[in-house]
Image (cartoon, rainbow, N blue to C red; front, top):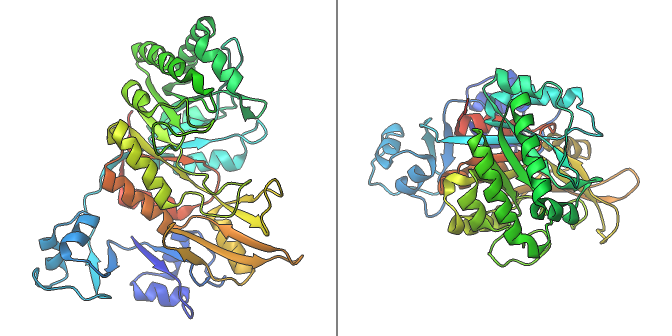
Amino acid sequence: MQIYIVKQGDSFYSIANQYGTSVEKVANANEVNPQLPLVVGQALVIPIYGQFYTVQPGDSLYTIGQRFGISAAELANVNQINIYQSLSVGMTLYIPESKEPVIETNAYIEPIGGQVSDTLESAARKHISNLTYLAPFSYQIDRKGNLIAPPLNQFAAIANENNATLMLVVTNLEEGSFNADLGQVIITNEEAQNNLLNQIIQTAKEKGFGDVHFDFEFLPPENREDYRSFLIKATDRLHQEGLLVSTALAPKTNADQQGDWYEAHDYKAHGEIVDFVVLMTYEWGYSGGPPMAVSPIGPVRDVVNYALTEMPPEKILLGQNLYGYDWTLPYEPGGEFAKAISPQQGIQLARENNQAILFDEKAKAPYFFYVDKEGNRHEVWFEDARSIQAKFDLIKEKNLRGISYWKLGLAFPQNWLLLEDRFTIKKRR
């Protein structure tokens, strides 16, 4: 599978011809209309066997082989070059398909307005073959520990038919927001805890859930040890029922990181207690903040590096957004929120406004600017094949358990093609 960046003068025909494939295959892989013009800077995934790599400064057969999981000797043999020769910058090497690492994958799926749309259910059916876990978001709780179920529609059947594990997500959401007081009640009140765990076990048995996922956010800092004690108790009971237990963790870079989102999340404790965690490594660029990449690779790497000092890599699912944002400029704190967009919508916006897509090499993320019909200037950051490949490379480099997506329902075909090409997806059933 090749990632290609559109240049001025390119066409679907010229690109397909360059790689010995067809316009139809390229268009179908990227879910684009070949009759529409390409966007300069647009990333395309080319469905070919293997891929080509352009030699960069400092590269050697050994370092390139390490990156792609192939020996220097095999790389030299495939490209019919001497293993001892130096590589010229700009030289093109063919990288054959290699044995891909086995990972686990999760995707949250969130009903909108309390309803599961046809789009959401279709997304679940379309991508379930590439998922280890499917996580309807979410079961909420009241202050007595009663579970409040989300609409599940056909999610259980979809997961079961495709050997995916249904994840029971439990949150301290109340009236649309994470509520610290509600979370505090649950992790400190034994009666509420017992009621909650009883209902979780009953629900898991009735609906076929295989993992229980606690996403308790903005807990009071003074309840850090209470949350730890609750997880020990919950994990012990749920393991007895044959259930996995996982948690969502705020993206910390040190144990003492300050802030309401971070302080009650003890990475070391979660790593010791639960079966795995999801690092929420996104929302650096968020709807109420200034324009920037949603999940820039540098900060994401910093979170992973810290997590690895507290827990083994096989316990970590890297969080990944399936969306971007369109900000109206100038950004003003407390002003208009950015609009969430899918990667496909990002490309469409660039095309409609005749804008080239730029790429921030530091953040490893695409972006562009445009002016709308009312004369307002916009800044757009989203995801593409290059940005997702950077996260895949990190997963391979650090030998992480896998990846977790927030959230299904936003079109990003390149992600799923590359995911299937770069990894073997583990099924637990």
